[in-house]
Structures are given as C-alpha cells and as structure tokens.
Length: 246
Length: 233
Ligand SMILES: Nc1ncnc2c1ncn2[C@@H]1O[C@H](COP(=O)(O)OP(=O)(O)OP(=O)(O)O)[C@@H](O)[C@H]1O
Ligand SMILES: [Mg+2]
Image 1 (cartoon, rainbow over the protein chains, first blue to last red):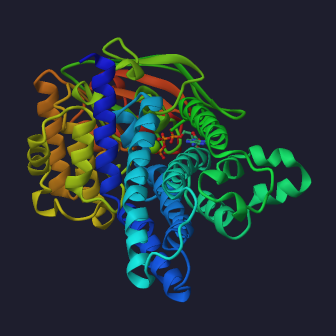
Image 2: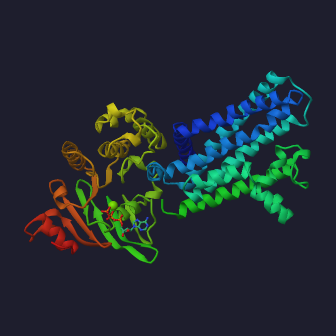
Image 3: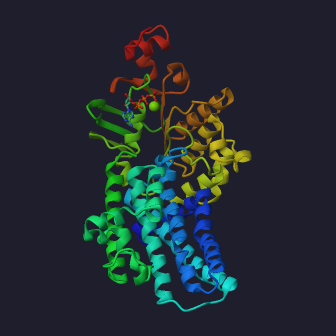
C-alpha cells in the first residue's frame, strides 16, 4: 500500500467512527429510513386506490431531510460542542483528505439509507392499501432519488464548511427543499435557474408531469449538472479549509 | 526539536506575533511564559499547522507539521480543553484519534489508565470536569507515544494532585529524551519543572534561556516575570 492510500484509509476509518458516534447521525438515519416508511403508509391509507409506488416515491423528500442533516452534522460537529476541529487537523493535517473522507462517509451512509428506505416505504404502502396502479419508471426514479439525496448531502457538507456552523445551512437547505425553493423563485425571473443544482436534478426523482417547471433538464443530463455543482462546491470547500486558520 | 524561525502573524491590521524565534530542545522542558494575549497560543497553533504564519516558519524535527504523516507518533499536543466533541465519550474520542493515525486500539485503554480516566471512559466529554477534560486532552496527546509534547496551559483546571502528577509526567518525558514545550502565565507554576524559559510579551520574545539565567538578578520569580514582560509590579 502506498502512503497516500494508507492515509486515505486511516482518514475514512476515523471519520466513519466519528460520524457513527454522533447522536445526530442516528436521528438523521431514523428520519431518512423510517420517515418515508411512515409517510408512504399514511399516503396509502388516505388514498387506498392510489399507486403504492407513487406513494413511496412521494415520501423521498424525507430521505433528503436526513441526508441534509448527515451532511451538515459531519462538518458542524467539528466546530460546535468543543471545537474538535483542532484535534482533527492535529491528527490529520492534510485537510483536503479529511474533507474527502467526510464526503465518502456521508455519501455511503446516505446511499445506504436511500437503498433501505425506498423498498421499505413501497412495502409499507402495499401492505396498507395494496399495489394500486403502476407508476412510470419506478426503479429509475427510486435510484434517481438516492442519487439526488447523496448529492444534496454533499452540497450540505460543502456549504457547512463555509458556514462553520450547522444552524444556517440546515434551516436554509431544509426550507429550500420543502417550504419554498429559492431556485424555483429565480426560475420565475430567468429560465437559466433550471441549471441550479436542486432544479437540475429534479427530474431524477419526479415524473415529468409532476414538476413545477416545464422545461426541466432530462434526468441524466440534470443529474450530471447537479453532480458538477457538487464537485465544484466541494473543491471550493477544500480550498477554503486549506487557506483558513482552523 | 521544535524550532520557530522568525514567525510573524498578522490578524487584520494587528501584528499578533512579531518575529518569534526560539527552540525547544530534546531532553528538556521548555516553558513558554507570557501574560494574557501575549501570543502563546497563537505561536503553538502555528507549530501545529492549525494557523498559517504570515511569514516565517515553525518546524518539528526540521519538518513543517503539515508534512508529517501520522503526526501523533512524532508530536502530541493539547490546546484548550479536551478537544473532544461534547457528546462523545472519552473512549469514543480516543478511538477515532487512534484510528486516524494507525495507532493500535489497545493504546486507548492504556492512555485512559495513564491519565486516571479509566472509570470515566464512558462519560461524555461534555460532562467531564475541567480537570478531567484536560486529562482527556493529554490522553490523546500520549496515544502515539510521541517524542515531543506541546501543551497550552496544561495545569489549568487540575487539582493539586493532578498538578504534581503532570509535573512528574512531563519531567520523566524529558528525562527519557523527549521534548516538552508548555505554556503558562505563572512563573512559579513552572519553576520546579522547566529547564528553559522563553518569555513572550506583546508578540515578541523578550527573554530565552536556561531558567536560572533568565531569572538571575531578580529578587523573586514574580519580579522577574513583571520586569521581563513590562507589567506592573
Ligand atoms: N482567532 C483570532 N482572531 C483575532 N484575534 C485573535 C485570535 N486569536 C488570538 N487573537 C489575538 O491574538 C493575540 C494573542 O492571543 P493568544 O491567544 O495567542 O495569547 P495567549 O498568550 O495565548 O493568551 P492567554 O494567556 O490569554 O491564553 C491576542 O491579542 C488575541 O486577541
Ligand atoms: Mg492562550
């Protein structure tokens, strides 16, 4: 094993330990997995003739909430509650490697949560009200939902590096995803807003007929645009971490 | 050996450190003394690669901290408090620190024992008393069996028994050939412990050398401190 690989393995293993011993992580995973199950069952019970698959897909935003929390907490825990950041950088002075390790750990956890949440939510909806009518491209949209959640978590992680605190990124990202989307408001001003990360990736999850904007990017193209945003934000976060005093 | 070579740190318009130059030698305890705000923590943070100097450099055995692979086997440090997230237990904190540097897991139990925290291993860091937090920070510093120890006000919060214990620990570390650099406000606190003194005031080193040389000609240690740092007596 080369030194660089050994260093990366050390960093990922350490960051995994850190994330798994934070109470907020457990909460986020519960929201991301049990939340969609409960919501899908509720939707199915209120609309017994509806499609179980649509009910499960409609519960995906709760995976997103858990994903945002995981991304934010992985970084904000370094700055709040005891300023652990000094311990982290004293132990692992290569800051981009620390960021990469955090991103890898968060991505894997969110992907695992999404992979567990969708089948469980689907099962719950079917148990409550039967399968109901088919929905279009269910598997693709379920996978797209997982990808969307992973990218959202990584964007949250990068933004928290800039903020050095969890509160603002959490409120902004969760509100942006649920109450009112800033990108959607911008879209009323310019159609270029469909290239913003949250709108760009939207068609990965939502069926064409359910979108609030009518010229949304196609699923794969939109996913790539969102991934490019994510990579760019993480790269800027790495530069900020290296330049800034810990 | 720890070397500081003309370290300058500017924060905004203010110069916090103005050309700090000194060394901490192996086999000796070096005390870094100065009043509040003199620049002790700033200097140590630059050594540990946490803050970037505006100019100059600080080296660990001739290398910048950022170039160290698995640094905890070379240099252990305690800044303020435990350095642990408040909702993690002492054991959980030490476990990730050990893993980050490929340090065997059994060291966690060993250092907990060494600093007297075995019974508090499962207590969340946020619930530890000030002195216990200091001990946890020290445990993390000792994990990798480093040759150099850097401690920012290590005595802060320790009870008399703890103070005596840490003095013995640091003395024996130096006697075994290790390098110890610790900061303090109190000359009396380090008089029995330090071989060398470095006194800093307003970002500048105003005296450095063996303890008796630095304090020579002053009636008491306190007088020496005030005379050197320009404070009221
Ligand atoms: N993050 C920061 N931002 C702005 N100024 C800072 C920062 N950290 C330290 N300073 C300033 O730098 C100067 C040196 O501070 P430093 O903490 O190094 O002093 P110190 O000798 O460790 O003091 P103390 O004995 O109180 O711990 C002080 O004037 C302080 O206000
Ligand atoms: Mg200080």
